[in-house]
Image 1 (tube, rainbow, N blue to C red):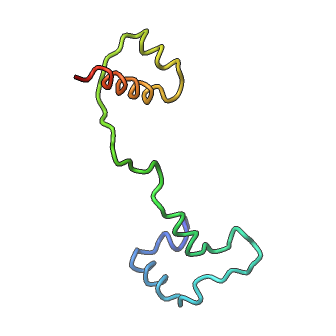
Image 2: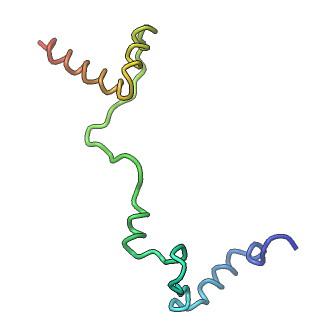
Image 3: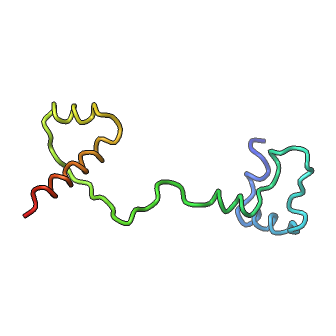
Length: 99
């Protein structure tokens, strides 16, 4: 026989079996193995928060711009954050050249 008995069960049968277990008998931690310790409500809330960068109020737009190879190589050679620095340099240029 391949697989476990649960693999052979249909979805409805699995749901019925899970619902048949009383809530107070669902899981009882024996206090020995910390890996089996159930998560608290606060831990679950923290784990379920959306991950990734926070959404900024002013989002940037992606555009295609062409640089000469040597200019691009020089910008990239300045390390991480080179695109942000180019953005700031362009903002400063706009400030100094506005009418």
